[in-house]
Structures are given as C-alpha cells and as structure tokens.
Amino acid sequence: MQVQTCKRLIMLSVLGVLTTVSAHAQYVKPFRVTIPFNFYVGGKALTAGQYTVGRGSETTAEAIVLRGIDGSGGVFVLTRGIQADEVQLESKLVFRRYGDQYFLGEIWTFQRNSGRELPISRRERLIKEENARLGASSEKVAVHGDQR
Image (cartoon, rainbow, N blue to C red):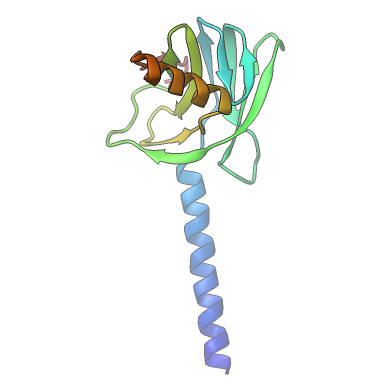
C-alpha cells in the first residue's frame, strides 16, 4: 500500500514539473509593436497604433493581453501553443488578411521557437467562407515588434 502511494506521489511530482516546463517554454516576453492598420482580435475591433503584447496572467501562458500604448483600447484573449521549425529572430504578430480586413492569428517572441495561436472568430470564419465562395485568396501579414 505504501509503495503504491509513493509511486503515485512521484508520478504527480514529475507531471507537475513537466507542466511547469511546458508553460515556461511557451511564455510570451512582453514587447511593443506598431500596427499600421485597423484589425480584429477575437470579436473585438482595434484601431491602428502602438500596442504592448504580454501575458494576461501570471499563472498561465494561454492568456495574452494586447493593450494600446495611449490607453485607447485593449483585449484579453486565450490562445494555444504552436511550434516553429526555427527560433524567431524578432518578436512579431502575424495577421490573416482578407481584402482590407486583418485578424490577429499568431504571436511570436524573439529567441523562441514556440508561439501562441489565436482561434478563428465567428466574424473571421464568415469572411473566410465568403472569400472562398468568391474565389478570393487570403494572406498572412507579419508586423514586427520593437524588442529583439
């Protein structure tokens, strides 16, 4: 009985360490970025301007906050981890563009090969479907941050 209890405690300890390492590996270092166009994050429309990008919570890597430097707006969004083949040379935001509408899709931090991906919003899904029906293409647009 004591042997099984000891094994369970060891397994729980190892799992806790792995979870902590995983969350730390996907941590977004705060950075500033100047976005030259109006855009959407989730269901919220934001205007062109300077923003800070950072963690939305001390306890989880999934929450990201985008705040206007001048206090004009901000948004808190949940994300999921993604991996790149190479370490990033710059911090950047990657937008999905459909015509003149931009949707924040990915957040990458300098010197990491892990990033954060935002889910597709209902609005973006509708625009994406309409573009597909019309045969219009979309593209990814990267906006580089000021932290290196």
